[in-house]
Length: 396
Image (cartoon, rainbow, N blue to C red; front, side, top):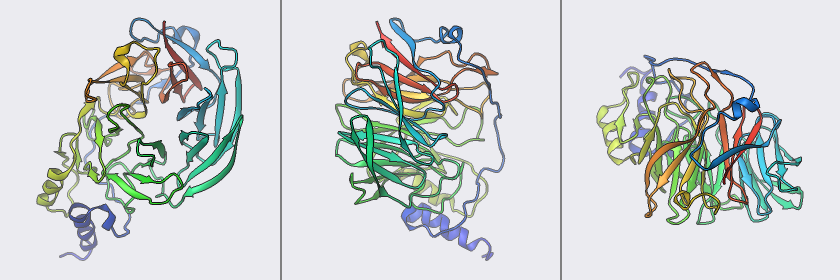
C-alpha cells in the first residue's frame, strides 16, 4: 500500500468499523471534490415598519416587535419570572429583556453576563447554563443579576466551521450539548465533534450521546413522549436541492451517518477516498434514518416545542424551528419560521411554513430568524440576528 494513504485508511476504518471514539488525531480533509449548486447571498435591508407588515402567519396570528436595536441576537431562553435572556456571540454577552408594563414590548434591558463567543443557553430553576466554543458554564440567577459563574465543562473540540454550541435539559435531568462539525464534509480529528454530548448538571459523567450529526443546533424533547428531536444541517456543495435538512429522532448511541450518509440512509458519492464501499454500506445499515426532511440549505437554528395556552389547541406540543436561510442555493431557501406538526401519539407528520415574508426576493431579505422561545404568556418570540429585532407572535 502507498505509505501516504496508510494512515488515512486506518482512520477511515476506525470511523466506519469501530466508531468515532476510536479515532486517532489527524488533520481533517475536505471530501467534496466536484462542487455543485450556487453561491447566492441575498442582500440585507432594514426592517422597516412597512416590511414588518408584510410578514405572513396563519389567520388569527399577529406579529409585532418585542425589542429592537438588540445587536445580533442568537439563542433565546425565558425565565420563570418572564425575563427573556438572549445570547449575543458578536458582543460576547447575554442580554436580559423584560416587559414591565404589559404592553407586549421590552421596556427593560440589561447585560447580565459577559463571556467570549457565548451562544448556547439553558435555564433550570434559578440556574443559567451557557456555552462558549470550548466550555460550558453554570451561574445562579438572583433577581436581576446572574452571579457565581463557574465552568462545569471544558476542553470541548475546536470550533472550526461550526463553533456555535447549544444546550438543553432533557426529561432525565441531564444536560445536552450539541457540538457541530469543524468542516463541511470530512473525517474529524476529535471524537466529540459532530455529536451531541450528555453530562450531569455539574458537568460530571460527560459522554457522547449521539454522533454523525453535522450541526444539530436546534433540538428539544416532545412534552408528552419525552422523545428527543433535532434538525441537522446538510452539507454544502452537493447541489441546490440536496441534501435536505433532516429531522432526526435522537437516541442514545445513535449514529446518523455524517459525512457519508444522509436522510433515509442515502449514501453520498464523495471524493475518492480509501474506504471500502462495503464498510460504508455496513455503517449505513446501522445508522438511524431521518424521520422528516425539509428544503436543502434552509439552515435550521433554534427549536422550541409549544407548551403555552395562547395558540389554538392544534398547536400544542408541536414544534417551531427558525430557518436562518441559505447561501448555497438558487433560489434561496429558509428565511422563515416553520411549524413541525406532531400527531396525538407524539410522532412528527410534516414541516410547514409558519412565519414568512423576510425574504423579499431572490436578492434581498430583511431578517434571518435564529432564536426561538415561548414566553410566559404563550407567545412565540423570534430573534433576527441581522437587524437586531426580536418579534413576538401572538394569537388574537
